[in-house]
Length: 92
Image (cartoon, rainbow, N blue to C red; front, side):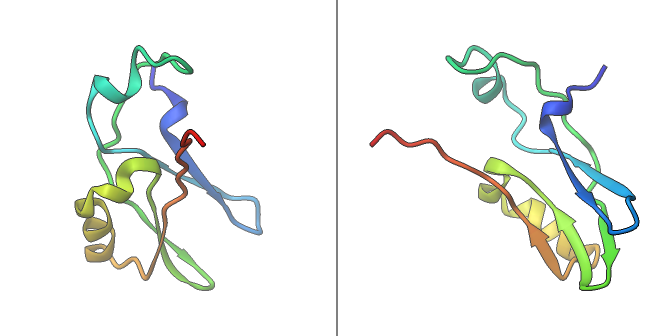
């Protein structure tokens, strides 16, 4: 069974939903044994690009922003826009 916690979805106005399963980084150091989380990461293996009325859209997530190969793979597949939702909790 794949872990749905590493999944990003995009909904169309007609209620279709497309998804991207996170591909990077592969590493138990970021996904297990954390103080606020404990889950096993199951990597995706595809970089889908989706047609929208605003252009071709690619999806990526979180720390993939530090992995340039993800954006490059999406661009090579025709992505004109890449959404990279991510968040970092930093102590104040």
